[in-house]
Image 1 (cartoon, rainbow, N blue to C red):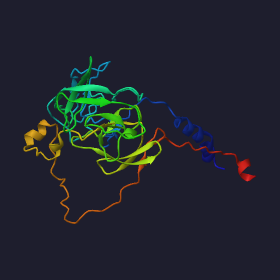
Image 2: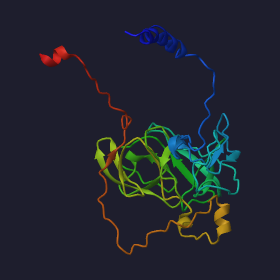
Image 3: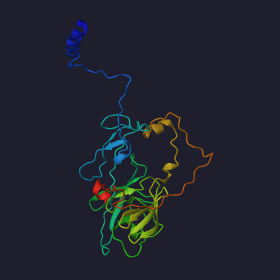
Image 4: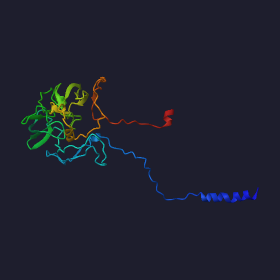
Length: 307
């Protein structure tokens, strides 16, 4: 072996290893300008959020008009635009509706009577609002079509053995109303308060009796829900039935209502090529357990599987 190769083996390898040692160097990596970070925006309509306004509720129920904060379709936390169709609008005060109609449960007691004191228009909803009172208790409810100032409305939570003859504006359980009755502000669960059928001019129809303690109600969308017989409902059709037929008239009026101008690319279908006729979905049974996640138990025990 030559002397040069011997020197290379003895000295070259240690020199290379010394030079290639990893040294810690503090540096800052600059982000690339052509990349963008994905921002997760909240979905509209989740947990009752429409991103139109925030109502500043008080600790106790009151008939005093509440202050609101218009959001204009933006998320109140991040300030990012979530719903592009909302913007502008006139700020209206909010009238707190008392959705739960309370009354006696004993059939021997007479129903609770409330007098309609005033019917007014609320800018935060489409149907009219009625101010009712009994003694010192005042509350707002959704007014029906034929409701007038001075009318007496009744409320009772008992279910008699035979259906009753209700008047418009009265509130009774679904099990106490006869078949074919027009209802609104229907409870989804007993004691939750009227959370179904709030739009102006809308109504539901009691179609049939499903089981011993369940009533089928046909919604304005022609879907049928099977609800518990003790769910409260208000009799009659909601007021301001002409709301859907009145044209807005101008772009300025639409802007005052809180609608942001659109691009004009979307056009409504004219129906020239017909429409798809789909059958209605089956009757949906709404109960406390509806929508609860199913628990699945998985076992990873190979001895049991091999037996």
